[in-house]
Image (cartoon, rainbow, N blue to C red):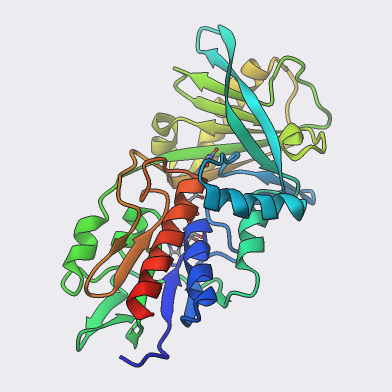
Length: 325
Ligand SMILES: Cc1cc2nc3c(=O)[nH]c(=O)nc-3n(C[C@H](O)[C@H](O)[C@H](O)COP(=O)(O)OP(=O)(O)OC[C@H]3O[C@@H](n4cnc5c(N)ncnc54)[C@H](O)[C@@H]3O)c2cc1C
């Protein structure tokens, strides 16, 4: 293996971008590859008539001082802002209450803009899908799509990462990528005007077979846009993964009921997240095998969320810098 061979990070979500940033800053050659057309992964914003709505991660929280520094930079650049510490809670029987917790952060330009800001100047190849078994080994050197690399980092949900690894070449990697993920359908409903008076900024929906969460995207983005985003339960998403729009009518009916509106949206869309959230977290913050396969992402955290994914990518980047000094 030559020292100028890059570490290749597959996945330009927040964990992959965080890992690549640490490597770049330490002078270790790195390349990022993502099948999408923009960085962000599950921190996704989709434009409806020119306005981005957040259809993946709804918000993020901050507890680690290192992540706090990154968030302060986003705040100073007017990309992120404290949104709220209080959400509503409703039961399927219709009982309503509120719950307060840590500050939840929102964004002005859509949550994807945060990952795009972190990824500035990083070499990313977009619209390139790495195929099944593409991470292998030749003469003791890891390879990606038959090309020798210093190491391969898989920065994505475990089930997506595991299928990219040749199990005969990297059995330890496959054995470590075992966390199951829950599915979510995200319904974006764009109305002609704001027509829900009782709805808080965000509403946790408990014990409902169809919905688990509703966000007021106009309040989250601070522009008053007449847009609601509802997330389904795993149980509602699973039977509709092959045909997500078919899951939309039941979600819209439940959304209108909880929002207290009889209006129909002027536009709606359903997005499928087959691997939305890890079923559980874990104490390890990354995987790095002796054969040069790394893995990071939200499942490599006891709090599998945006902050946990950033911490995981950062920790793996630091370990690779130690290894390749
Ligand atoms: C509906 C939903 C709601 C959520 N709500 C919240 C929330 O409120 N708060 C919170 O903190 N977190 C929330 N999350 C979780 C949060 O989005 C994730 O923890 C975080 O974005 C994970 O980042 P990551 O880098 O680990 O993975 P990802 O963002 O999934 O990045 C993986 C990347 O890998 C790429 N990729 C995958 N396979 C391949 C391949 N074969 N070849 C090339 N590229 C590939 C993908 O395109 C993607 O860009 C939510 C997630 C979802 C889906």
